[in-house]
Image (cartoon, rainbow, N blue to C red):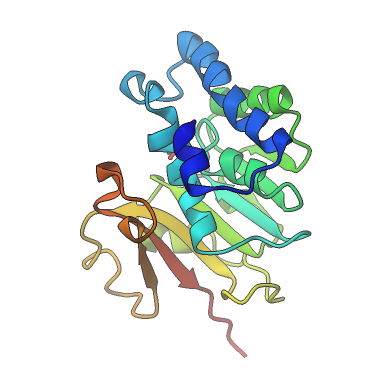
Length: 209
Ligand SMILES: C[S@@+](CC[C@H](N)C(=O)[O-])C[C@H]1O[C@@H](n2cnc3c(N)ncnc32)[C@H](O)[C@@H]1O
């Protein structure tokens, strides 16, 4: 938990308590189903919570804005972001029902009122969002196809509406079609070795006509 304080200094008491509660909630769930890998549960704050919050180093979601987390799994990056931005509406989607059950339980345990969940595939959604966030779900080309039409045309942030994807490693092949993508290197924000090759990829949506 100290690692969250190290990089996010202005947390409210409620936010601190919510972040602290995550460890116990995920530990309990991990005894029943493997939501976070066994190795990672000991490093939940470094590998999952802070990693999710890297998106907050790229954009500060505004009050009233809407964010979709595609393939949220156990709730990453959606849950840590929902704690950090309590005035933003988060929609967390996963095609596996038991993962959404975990997310619902964590949301309830934290008393988060800005999170909605759906058990289903992102391709079935109809709503639109300021940003779509994700980690470890699909290659960019597939992801862009799945989320087509889900980005709102109304611009509320300085950063253009679009996809904010947590990725790692060499992305030159995967992103070669997306020459306008902006890559934010996480070692610019976090000094821990875990972040050495990690990035946030921002892909702004272009609209025709
Ligand atoms: C490797 S997990 C990543 C979970 C989480 N984002 C994380 O980083 O911890 C990928 C998740 O994406 C979900 N998923 C894959 N394709 C999907 C789709 N088309 N719509 C919704 N969820 C999807 C899977 O069910 C799985 O839970």
